[in-house]
Image (cartoon, rainbow, N blue to C red; front, side):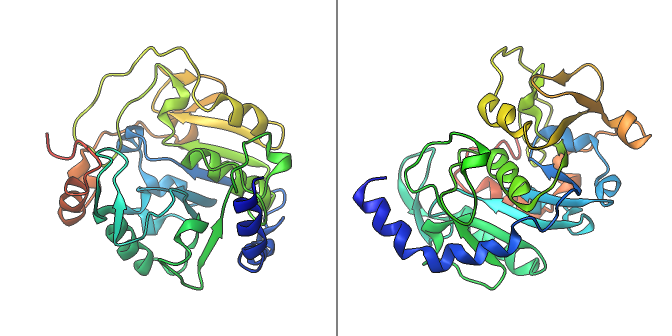
Length: 274
């Protein structure tokens, strides 16, 4: 850890120590981790309210979000909640439309505990918001990381959610909407329009995080049907899981027009209407 990160780490102890209250809170329990993949277009989210859920990124734009038992939510992108930011796609410093949309959703879901980057400590504070940071350190394993100290599992929404689940003591996890973990690999998001072709990309995504997480969790990934399989993890089809056939719905059936319009103006290159 370099000097700057050591100073930041010491300065952040009071903030990070709040996270200790979550250590082992759900020891031995089962949960769902929700990604944002297009496979969610085929699912009735009412089938997933029997266990605690951890969500990430754009999940709260789904009309059925409040019907889930989402207790925890991860948005780890740094500086996501400032009024202006450097857009990761255009690389331009511009008005932060996405962050504004996120703020509104957080206000509407005060019952959810949010984990976000320490970089946003000065931009958004509420009693249900907690912060985490990697302090420049690389991921070496979930045994060596925790949200109460140096949290190195911030590479993606999935990596962060796995780290939170392990820290809280969950032992059995089903991944929902994590289409990039399957082969053929699903593309796109539930809030985007249309059906994008799957790819035969052979290189597993998030292999390091998943392989290590399996030392701590009984993991599986949900697929629309058996034409897709888990790349690293075992899979279970939606029909085998729920007893129902998958039913496709378009993005305008799952997300309000107001939110679709906001996402289309966010500068994140989402395929909302085309």
